[in-house]
Amino acid sequence: MSITRVQAAPRQGRIAIVHLGLGAFHRAHQAVYLERYRRRTGDVDWGVSSANLRASVDLVDALRDAGYRYHVAEYADSKTLTLREIGVIEESLFSGRDAEGDWGRDLEALLARMVVPETRIVTLTVTEKGYFLNPASGELLVDDPMIAADIADPSRPRTAPGILVEALARRREAGVPPFTVLSCDNMPDNGKRTRNAVIKLAERRDTVLSNWIEHEVAFPCSMVDRIVPAMTKADFARLAELGIEDPNAVIGEAFAQWVVEDHFPQGRPDWAADGVEMVADVAPFETMKLRMLNGSHSLLAYLGAPQGIETVFEAVSRDDLTALLRRYMLEEAAPTLAMPEGTDLAAYADSLLGRFANDSLRHRLHQIAMDGSQKLPQRWLSGALARREAGQASPCAALGLAAWIRYTAGRDHAGTAYEVDDPLAPRFAECHARHGRDPEALVSAFLAMDDVVPPALAADAVFAEAVLTAYRSLTEEGLDGALATLAGRSA
Image (cartoon, helix red, strand yellow):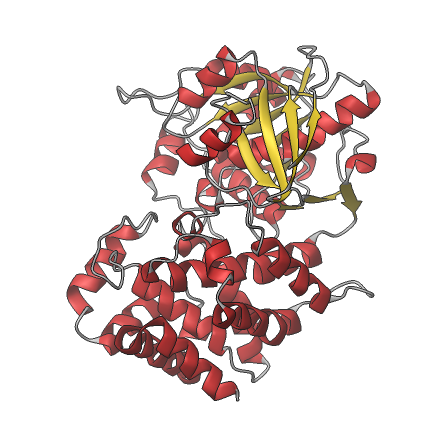
């Protein structure tokens, strides 16, 4: 194996970026770009304070114990590896719920860090559900218990929108200009949606504050791309064989992309030379990635996981699944995209299939399948709705939706139970308990979930029939039969 080792630049303790969501993707994406920038320029003014908002404090403490250094293993394939040491994170904090049920161990430290003038950017990777927005309409979920708690006690926020509102309120009171808020999550118009969540929550507190946020705070959009599977014991063992004993290490692909709307009133790193694409409009790139890459991943997850297929690599090793992805990307997703002149979507589809076939990554389908109710509106359903309005069918998306409905039953084709990790999992379980023996009623119940499925798409008889037919095919004939049926229709 060819291994390139890259040492971290010296740590300096100077922080200008606060990140909400100290997970694997942040450590393997934004932090890597900032590490490259620091190594190239020697500019130490853009260190990061990263806060974990999730339930576990272990990562926060482990990173602190390691002196805020960790490794990212970037695999081009099974024979080419870059081992990159990262030291740009200067601080780790915890504002989630601990094992005793208490909230916000480091919340005041986090808010204090966000209020000081030196903090100029706040970035987020909190997943789609972390914004507490209705996936279909984009409205703030004011009745969610977490958001309700932030409305009742805004000085002790539990959610990312609540933390942003409280920090911005304190900056305004102190006469400090607002930081820029940069979402790095897989949502269409992620900057606009973040802005909407923050303003709507602020309105519940103080209309003067919400007006100030609306007119003074920048929320640029961004598109992020890098495949970063969840770490497993086998992954840590693989790194240990290379001499890397690091509990905070992350494995990802060599490919990475970051496209950012260039709107940073308080300044930003000059990071274009390190691969960050600064553009006036992120939307075309964002939609392309969501519908083609993420949409393909979701197809593999919901079709493959119940069949016992464990990883993306195993899935695309099947010719029929690769053919499905190619058809979906080129016939259903690509025609809905409005890309800049010169964009070759066929070449992009080929590049994605090549990335999926990276045999060094173990990207589990069950990981991709998490939070489907939050992801599918932007990955499949918005495109299917656009095709419906143009008088076109979406058989691949219909098959995917049928597979998702089947997946939410929580049992694979052999009858083995698995966890359905989704905010709406109790509602799914109720639907299956009530309608599990009646496919038509079950599909109708899922299509009626207007916080997931756009009502105009659910009301389309052709699409609804396609989903029902695909569901019956999956449950009666299995994956092979469903794929053969779809392929036969296109022959």
